[in-house]
Length: 471
Image 1 (tube, rainbow, N blue to C red):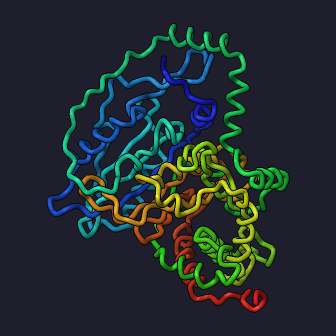
Image 2 (cartoon, rainbow, N blue to C red):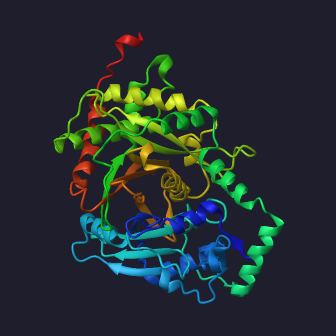
Image 3 (cartoon, rainbow, N blue to C red):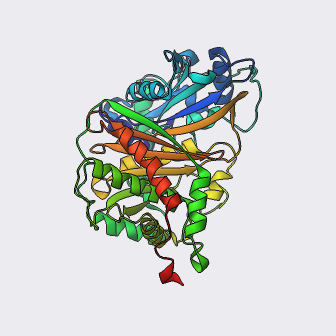
């Protein structure tokens, strides 16, 4: 019998609109080996890897009359060359040109009649580099049956990918009559299925430590502040990549976390303080009123351990809501306020620490960004102003075949009335931000990108304003 989509997965299909495509993406920049890297090699690599993830050769089939959720069926006409595409940048192949390419291809919705993913090989970058731009629908990435396609492509071994014996044969697609019969049979055998699905969705979104759940409940009763980040959006996008040095975040954390408060400040807190300072500067450049009490509420997806197996990540992601103190003029005070707010929510003990995430086998970052995006899309915009996904990646080199990955930037989707999304991944000594914004309402997205760089520099140079009070 075909696998049926959960109610949560199906919701990402039903809620998709032209202005809110429900897929996530990534931009991975590579240095090719001396012998080069071409389209045929990429096709071989992906063909080999998806052999272990059957979902990437399956498409979605609707049940006539929508008597039940859609099902996954094998794509009998699967064509790898449709999904793996080739493009090139005009000389000089700058990062600005790559950003514009991403901004143009990412908003286009995936073809519902085929498996819901695409990969673009972008050649012609300066200094001989190339990029892989990926798109994966959120209905596909549940962290159990399928991971993000970027997660599939790269690993820690530098090997020339050789073709493998492909034994995959598609199963016969069910007829409309069979789909209806199966749906009716399930309704008879499990009349409580709808209730179970609703409970499952709720559990997946909000199951976490009691402190986090109570925080969500409190936040739900307190709408997010009014912000220029929450406006009606269109179909077109802007995309900005910002690379920073992980060592700078460590320096700030080590200098500002003092004595018995040393465990109070985490790298993630420094990241959120950097974003807070950037939003403050960006608002000021726009002439917005910023006073001491001004805040921007961020929804920060946090992965939690599987309760039965703490070594397994699973697909459980919960929400932390942080009121970023953009009105606070002191960089160090912003950091300590954020650290306190995050600690209040994370004391339940189930959250996965950055070191644990970075130590996971494989490249978990794209999949975790995908799960975070699912959470953000499923929650009301009234609860927060912006989604910030921060997923620490491995601190050793990764490869696509024998091509070295130099950097990786997430592309987080925009929900309705969300003008910008912020994703970041740490990898091999760097911290890489991907800013995805509405093209019309965020003409100054590059300014926000520069503000991130300036905000981090301000934190690196700042003194701890709370030093005296803590002695």
